[in-house]
Image (cartoon, rainbow, N blue to C red):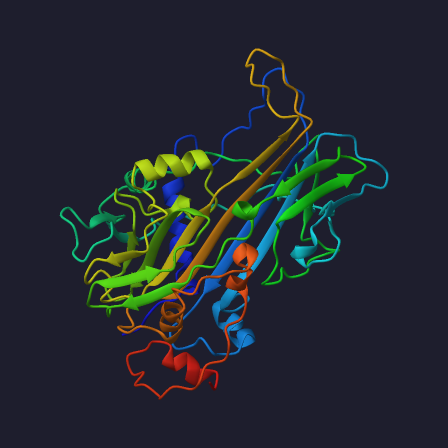
Length: 437
């Protein structure tokens, strides 16, 4: 039985996302609205992410080779940071902006915010007579939609969407109804007319975030086209702990139960899985949402308001939740990858602070937003607990005494070799042989 991995279903996912966008209210984007009576002011955003990707039986493989297989950095916990700045001021002749960081971040004294180089767009010369456009064939897509944690498939599931039996408009509308819990629109700083845009990482600085990096402490953003921005990041808004599964049990024919270590600063969780059944030509979706939703639009950052709303509507799981089950047999004919998102709290700082009297005029000088999330990914349906899961379970009751729980991102000590197991049912055995593991 052939199993699919994330890179092998990108085309299918892109097609389905495009169809879903057709039915989203107002399209994919909305117009930005300024605050009435207020002058535009600099905006500074920090996107703070923790990632952890693991595959059963491959925990000890070289990171470089694993990275090539997965199309990314490799497996194991990692951290990323994205800094974006917008300023409505006039661009000086020699623009300069820096973010002075606390010592615990272990990335030097500061990070330079650089204005991207403008890319020249070549003008295309059109012939007097264009060739007739080729007729676009109707895409073929059949989807089975499941949702909710539990051992058995619930009544009324799956919901089936099929382009051969539906028009594109009907398909898009149906997809839209299954992606109805879209997050509120947010507009990070970006290149736009009349504003200066700068970011990090960039062409001058793109160092990797250390695994023991901590954002806690005083932050200072300054330059010759922005006002001084001073703010503090506390423990609640530091890098989140990585997603660690304490157990994953059940084969592809069974109900697959997975459990995870609670993340102290998480405010909610979401789990999703997508797989493709080649033989039947079906794409299968499941999400942990208690209401019909495939979770397409919920894998990024969520605002505090959206978190409260989606918790109330039972779209995302309560932060105290530590286990969930995928109903029996959903992925019996198609291997799946579990994608898990832990949402963090959002830090918003505006200077000067908004007055308590709503009638008093208030003109901000600058604003800072810090968004947080932690994501994990692993294979499903292997029918046994992984070594890494067992190691996590053994350490579950060990209390971390270090401030900021910084040990979460550190490498685990080398393990003693275990007896070789029968891997005939493991879809990754061929990968190991291919790369000489």
